[in-house]
Length: 201
Image (cartoon, rainbow, N blue to C red; front, side, top):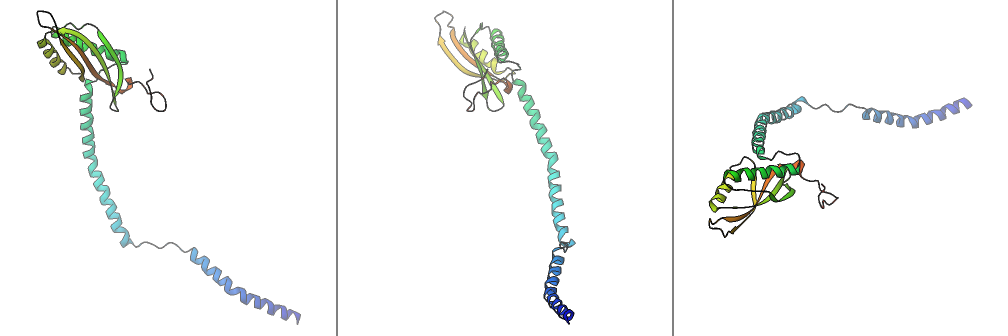
C-alpha cells in the first residue's frame, strides 16, 4: 500500500520534471547546431571581386617600382653636389677651398676666412655650412667669380654680398662675400633638451 503511494508521488514528480527535461535537451541541441553554410552562388562574386582588386594592385607594382628607381637616380645625381666631410671643420675647409680655387682662376686673391659659421639644419634631411670672406677685386673679376661659382658642381648659395668702392686708381672694389654649401644631415648638431633649445657640440 505504502509502496504504491510512493510510486504515485514519484510519477507525479516525474510528470512535472519531464517537460522541463525535454525543453532543456531541445535548447542544448539548438545551441550546438552548426553555422549556416553560405551558398556557393553568393561566395563566387565576392571571390571574383577580391581577385580583380588583387590583379589591379599587382598591375601597379611595376609602375611604382619604375617611378621609385627614377626618383632614387635623380636624388643620387643631385646629391653629388653635397660637400663630403666627416666634421663641420672639414666641410668649412672644403667650402673655403672652392672659394680660393675659383678666386685664383679669376685673378682674385682670397686669403683666409673672416668667419666660419656652425652648421645649421637645411630642411629635414640636410645641413648648411657657411663661410664669409673679404677680398678686393675689379668689378669684372667679381662678376666672373660669381658666375664661376654658379658653375661649380657643389650645391652653393650666396648668403651675403657687400660691395664698397675702393680709392685706388684701378677702381677696385672691396667685397665681403658669404657663401654656404650643403652638407649631410649627420653633421647637423643635435638639439639639446626636451624643447630643442640650443645645440650640442
